[in-house]
Length: 355
Figure (cartoon, one colour):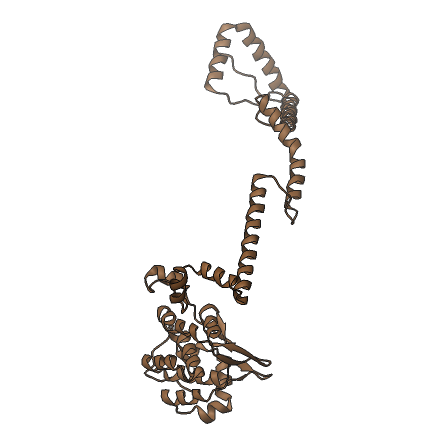
C-alpha cells in the first residue's frame, strides 16, 4: 500500500492522497485489491482494465469500492509514465481502458494537457455502465468526458481545480476554441455559422434541431422580458415587481415626505435645521440659560451669607484700581478702617495699624 519511492508528488502531495483517506482504507480492505492488485505493473493494470464492466465509485450499504476505483488507486501508487497514459487514452478498442486513462489524467495532469488529450474523446459516443451507490445507470463516453471537465467531483472523488478553457486560451496555454467534429460540415454547408446550420436542419424536419431551436427561442424571450422589466424599474414606470419592493418603497416615501417638506420650508427661510429641530435647540438653550442663572444666584447668596471676612486674592489690575480709589477718597478709607476694627474686636483680634 506504499507509493513508489521514485514517484513524484502531484499537486504538492502524495499521489495516493488525491483519494480521500476513508475511501483509500475501503480500497485497501477490499478483496479485489488484496487478491488481484498486489504487485501490478502498468501493463498488468491495462490487462485488468480490459475486463472492467462498469464505472463507479462506492456502492452498497458498506460503501464497497468498485474495481474501476481500485485500479485508479493502483495507477496513482505506481505512477506510470506519460507515454503509457497516452496509450490508455488512444485505445479505442476498449472503452473502459480509455475511461480509466482519462480519469487518471484528470487527477494528475496539468490543465492544458488535460484539455488537449481528453477533449478528443467528445467524439466517442459509446455507452458506459455506471454503478451508483443504489443501482445502475447508462451514460456515454462524451458525457463522461464532460463531467470530468466541468464537475468538481466524480465517482465520489474530489477532482483538482481545473481552470476554464477560456482562461487558458487568453493566457496562451491553448490555441483557440475547441474544434468540434462538426466544424468541417458547418464550414462546408453554412460557411462556419452553426446557428444557420441548426435552422436549416430544423426546416428539413430534424426533430432534435426543432427542439433545440424552440429552446433557444424560449431562452431568448425570457432574457428579453427580464431586460424589459429591469428597464421599467429603473425608469420608474411600468408594472410593479412581483416581490413587492415597489410597494415597500412607496410606503417609505409616504412616511418620509413630511420631513422632506419641513426641510424644504426651512431651506427656503435660510435656516439650517428643520422647524422641529429649531424648537428643540431653543428649548435646550433656555434650559441651559436657566440652570446657569440658578447657579449664579446660589453663589451670590452664599457670598452674602458668609460675608467678606477673609482676604481675597485679586489680580494686579484690581489691586491697582483699589489703590487709585484709596488715593481719591480718604474719608471712605477711614470709615472702612473703623468698620474693620469693630469687626475684628468682635472676633477678639487686634485692631488694624493706621499708617
